[in-house]
Image (spheres, rainbow, N blue to C red):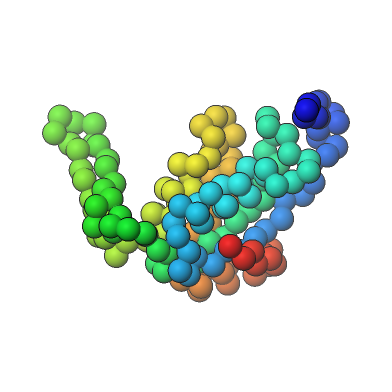
Length: 149
């Protein structure tokens, strides 16, 4: 079976304006939430999807502090960063990061599932993550549609 990919001006004509969606992360498993949000950001669910164009939609994730980590990940998962200096490796457990910056955990999970190409930064700008539902008020003008996971 062959897949049709629009090219050039035809691809630009298929490009439709980006929609806004809101996702409630309350009791959602982190990985499953991240895959669905990444799919919306890429635009894979649209019939006008073209691999080399950014045809994804904007996503607002609320209640990031209520996201679930299954198994023992809360105690065993570690986020690493390096300062660039010798001995500058920092290891922070997920339980401590969740207490201070839960929106960062969701953002990192989603960005890790985006393709590593030139469109990644543009797609990443379409993601907004908020700790609680109060962040949704900032995007009332865009009238985001709720999506059930």
